[in-house]
Length: 263
Image (cartoon, rainbow, N blue to C red; front, side, top):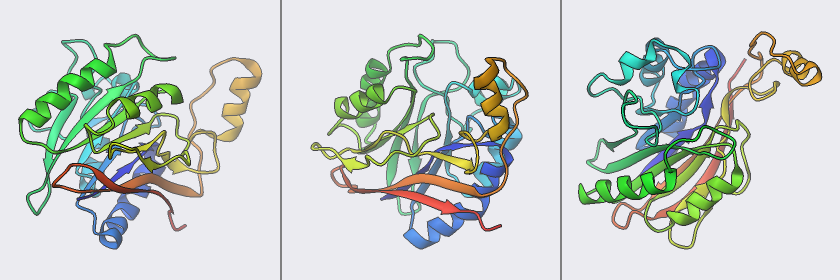
């Protein structure tokens, strides 16, 4: 099973990158499933039903999210709809809209369990993502899923690394998101779990994590929140492709992806 996971999709430029490049990558690499983190897909912060549906129509099979999930109010009702292909982090307290895990099927009958988690270091004091992962991995395995992918959406590299090693051998891949900066530490851990601290983002490359450079610099200089403006030009898609052995659930390989959207 070949899985593509693309990092935080930032606004209209990020959605354009997905629309144009995911079908090309699917054909070039023979991808079975494509997943993307959509938490910044609407205007750079949050998700709307329209943005989610656009991404799903562009070639993604499932969307994950993170701390900006709730930035657009209209997403709440959408998350609760049956069979919706938009997850939210599983370790939000009971009563939060939506769900944090699911199972995807490939065209050839393969099954992939997917878990969306959010970290707690420098972020919200949510339920424990490690123990949430324990419970959901056990549930997915009991349901017959050998292959399991985890999107660990968090700030601290240490927390992402710790979860990767904690789940090593129990899941197929732990891939980090949230920082919008692609890291160069992709590897298959000793137990057979593919890991990377952060897969990066889909959006304007000539920017500060997707924001217009001048606006972002002004925030640092003045410590005031100015207008939230997206960058433009030189749009790129970043992510990682994981090849998973469907018999064992272990990863065979992980490769970083960076593709430029033609201008």
